[in-house]
Length: 455
Ligand SMILES: Nc1ncnc2c1ncn2[C@@H]1O[C@H](COP(=O)(O)OP(=O)(O)OP(=O)(O)O)[C@@H](O)[C@H]1O
Ligand SMILES: [Mg+2]
Image (tube, rainbow, N blue to C red; front, side):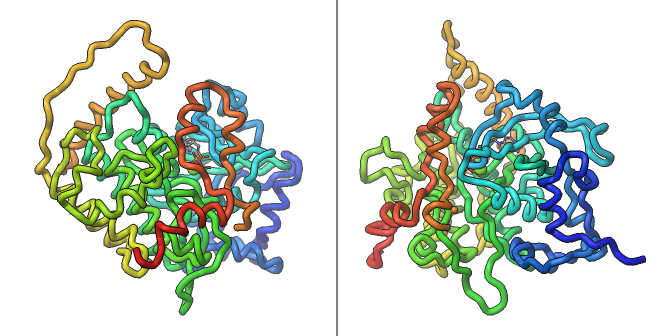
């Protein structure tokens, strides 16, 4: 029997048809080996025509939802289902039943809705579908499906109970994440990146930052947001040259200055996240004294000196961490943040190092401090209580563990921030590191002084 001809154009033209003419609810393509993973460049070839029989359903297997279904799932995108907002648009919590699609299990989901007036669009949505539709790993968030109807673009993910690392790590009025939980998160994120780099066709993630690390109920870390992901160099190529995209405070210096992107750019960004976990400080914070505003610039010289470790470790840990573990983690962060990309460790080395640190048990546990509740708590303090409960769980876990291009194409989140809804959200957002607006802005921030040759 002649194979069903499936062109990528069909998928994407299908998006612009009416709901009734949408393709079958599930895209399944069969028998594609890892090396045949579809990349974005396959789609940019206008003549590309791919056959269903060429691909494996285990590699590309997503549910296609209608807008109406996702409205229902999220109670009409109700404010009470709001989870967060980034450059792509608002994310809502929802619940899908197993009756919605054959093979779909009943579960909570996160539905990300493209802001039609925003700076991102079909391209980022497509990157997400192409990468997360094919790459499945315990440390990558699972993309369950999508909606592509007229101009609407939505993504449906597994729901991650504890939201993103940025909120968990920097939220005021909540108990600090314990040391072993931080290491577990770092190791999880590192495994996700190591998986991407270890693929037969390596993937560079390009947007590693605390807000893109999502956490499950047991602090299992998963990478989300593949809108900036790209295929890495292949064959004899040492790098790919791309337009500079990323987030201020996380992007690697050589990438900012030359546009040369390698897997080592992700290693640098990982070093920044690791540094944030060690210090409890954001990668960029304009509220700090000028010399400390850029975390890497301030902390890197201190990282290499074990005697200065206590100057950078998060005071909220109250000394409750393995000294040897912290020393080794600091040395690892120092290597990841090396100015010379070839001196950085590979992500598989990073994973091994972090896993060995999880074994260390020379942790001093301080006295238990009970904070009496006060009357007239505001909503935020109440949230804190819930988080403290969560922290207790994470102490249990500890024992267990001992166990974006042209200037115009840069992700622009500050615009989104301007019309944020309620007060609480705005306050958190205003403290967040700014997304880079231009190559020039990034260069100005990081390219001079911080990465001068004498460093
Ligand atoms: N699968 C998910 N489960 C639970 N919460 C999620 C999920 N996906 C996203 N969120 C929440 O929605 C927020 C917004 O996500 P999104 O990735 O769009 O933006 P961001 O990471 O904050 O910013 P950026 O646009 O720079 O990536 C996240 O920070 C997270 O709190
Ligand atoms: Mg994100």
